[in-house]
Length: 247
Image 1: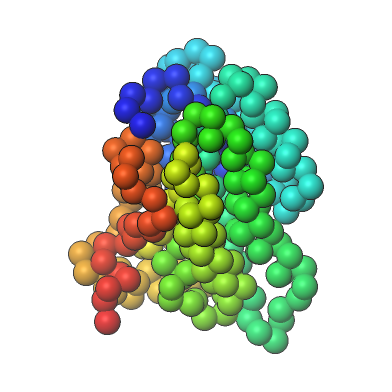
Image 2: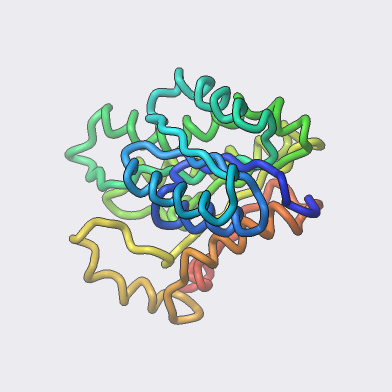
């Protein structure tokens, strides 16, 4: 994509954790940012204020519950109103919680599939004409558990597997004008679920590099797929310290 100055990126779930680091990295490289958030209003406003102070008129925050797919068209329309341009869509927003088989409900299915799979699909649908105009790209944040299902997290794993396939099918459907790729993190940030804290070292031991990664590792890969990979599409890059190839 060459120089990124003046390009516009919509990043979902951009207020916290990996999403916030992607926002910071792309903003630092000259992109204007549309930061989507849902419940993390305080964090979103703080990040917008922080980055706006370093470069005026360069970032806005938009709130939307992505489980309401009927409102996604409105989110994209609102995003377009600021700069009338869209070059990058980063589908980062995610819902994550356990769903052991005896306890699964249709509400769990709707929530986890809605945020992790349906929302990216409809965001791509609503953004496609704008991305085609700019010859832009889509980056989907997948997960190591798209390939290695996580016990008691079946719906989440299914949704992320669907997101991986969405990445590949959209790369075919939107070619040659829009590139679609994915980033699959593993052992980067721990889920905010206390019961799994005792598993951290075991997960690190499963990586080839024997260490935990950082959100910046994911942000660097997103930047690479946007700026330095004009001939890459339909690919999912694992950022997991080699965990996906360990035995």
